[in-house]
Every structure is written in C-alpha cells, then in structure tokens.
Length: 307
Image 1 (tube, one colour):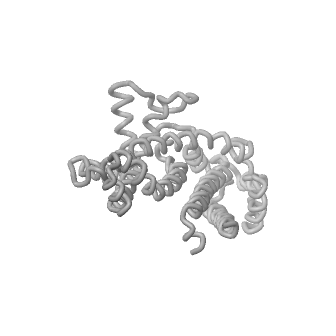
Image 2 (cartoon, rainbow, N blue to C red):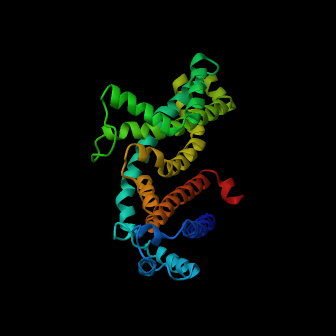
Image 3 (cartoon, rainbow, N blue to C red):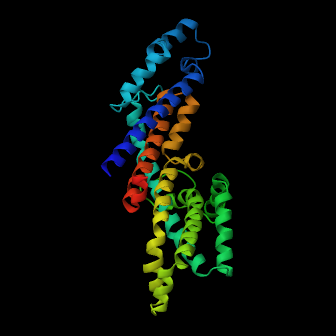
C-alpha cells in the first residue's frame, strides 16, 4: 500500500509540474503584460522600463525555472495590480470557494442520493421515470442559465434572497449559487446511486435477506445501500474537486469573492501572477482530491493497488 501511495504522490507532483509549464508558457504567449499595464500614450522607453521592472526582459526559459523554483516555497510572484504576493491574494479567496463547494456538495448529496434510492426501489414506476427525467435535465442544463432563472425567481420576483456578494456565513447568500452548481452533481449522484442500488438489489445476499423475513427498510439501508455506496463515495470525492474548479461562471454571475472571480479579474487586467496562481491552485486542489480518492478507494478495493 505504501508503494501505491508513493506512486500516486509522484504522479501528482509530475502533473503539477506539467500544469505549471502549460500555464506559464500559455500566459506568456497571450501577449506582453507590459503593454497591457502601460498607458495608451506610453513611450517605448517607458514600456521597456515596465518590462524590466517586472522581469519580463529575461529569456522565457530562465523566467520559467525561476518561477518553478518559487512554486516549491509557495511564491507565485507579486500581483501587478494589487502590489502584493499573489499567494496571499489567492489565500484570501480560497475559503469562499471552498465554502461554496461544500454547500453545493451537501445539497447534491442530500437530494441526489435519496432520489437515487427511491428510484431504484420503485423501479419502472412513475417516480422512477420522474427521477430519470430529472437526472437527464440536471446533467444537460447550463449552470449560467439556471443561475439566472433562480436569481430572477427568488431574488427579483419574490425578493426572498440576495442577488450578489457574500455576507459572512449568512446562508441566504449561499442558497442560489450553491444550488446552481449543485444540480449537475446532484443528477450524477442520483443516476449512480440508482444504478448501484439496482445491481445490489438483484444480488443473492439481498434476496436471501428478504427470504429471512427482514424488514424492507433494513434490507435497503443496511444490506443494499452499504454495498452500493462505494462507487457513490468515489464520485463524491471527484465531484467535490470539480465543484472547487467548476464554479467560475456562477461566481461571476453572483459576484462571489472566490477563485473564479479572481481569475476573471486577473484575465481582464492581464495580471499574469494572479492568473497563474488561480489556475495552479485550482489544479492543485483537483489533483489532491483525486489522489485522496484513489488512495481511499485502494483501501476499500485491494484489486486497484495490486492491479
């Protein structure tokens, strides 16, 4: 098991290095940041001075290795516009993105898994068809469209919830943004739970439990759900990583002060350190969550680590 964990950690580090190269050289190819920062009437000498001050006059390969060395000590460089370390700016925004992702995951689990169980137990019934229709709709519905519709209904028409921003941990500010990004994951939980439950409910040990005369609730929640939940847990871990990185559009719509909104601000102002820091942080969170899921799943199913 230790060998499996070590291999996954090495894979994660290698992936981060590749991601850092892609982000660094990709942002470098988008244009000269000095030109974006200089006034419209700036002289060539003034632009060159800005370029030199930012260290952009050095060869790109040398700049990349300096940048890579800084990453290992948590140095993403200094924000061009905020005049402070990009790492500090990102750390200010991460808690807001994590709070939104956790809220969305809670909503997805609280609604998606019970719907999946009910759909499997009531197979081929009206409730099952309704659940499957909801799953298809949820997985195909654009987040930005749903966010705008929910904002119009609950914030504009009924004036029940705020439309933008965040006020501490006030739950009213979480409901619409969290639900908007949770619907896709909720539909995934519903479909996966239904499939896993149907497979388990047709197994021999569940049939035997029913033959013994056990209560149906005990058969469903103790014998069936306990064995069907393993792939659901795996999906939950991957989904949480996706929620951490998949809320950019919703954050922009609701002016949520998270990583997604910060990334857009960096793109608009050509603040390269902020762009690189937000993308790498999002990638890091996704890779860490994926690695944790792999390790946990390997503990549950030894065939994975031996395979």
